[in-house]
Image (cartoon, rainbow, N blue to C red; front, side, top):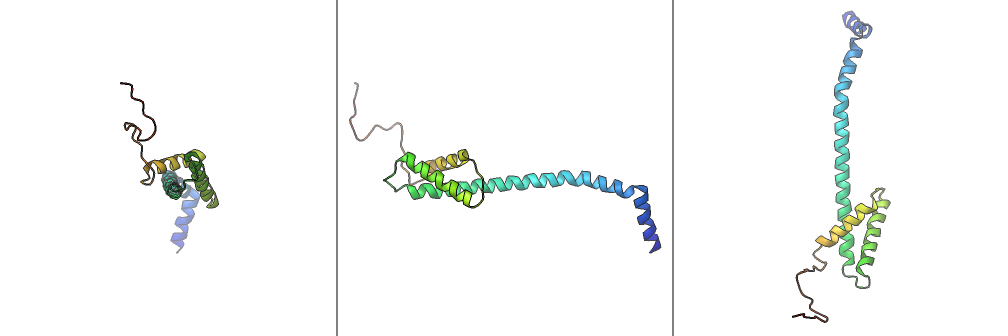
Length: 129
């Protein structure tokens, strides 16, 4: 037992213990920083997934509402997504929410698709032949 105590005292007095600690810290600190950055990236990815899911739900719930114009539906959807995120304590920029709502509108099967190559089917068509 005395020998273990003597070795411990020698490590402390000679500075070898401090050297080992500093070496270990120089090795461990970058590993811990990389883990922290990876965790932050995963959290951001999950948050974007949540924003997209909320935007999909908001757009799909407003598709059949004929009382609102497209611009009004967009405003209502972005407001709904923003308020839901704020209620849950998430801080997401307005631009991110707007992009998510626009993306949800574009990929929704419930919204009409317009082909710019098609000629109008209603209204007056002037043929300049």
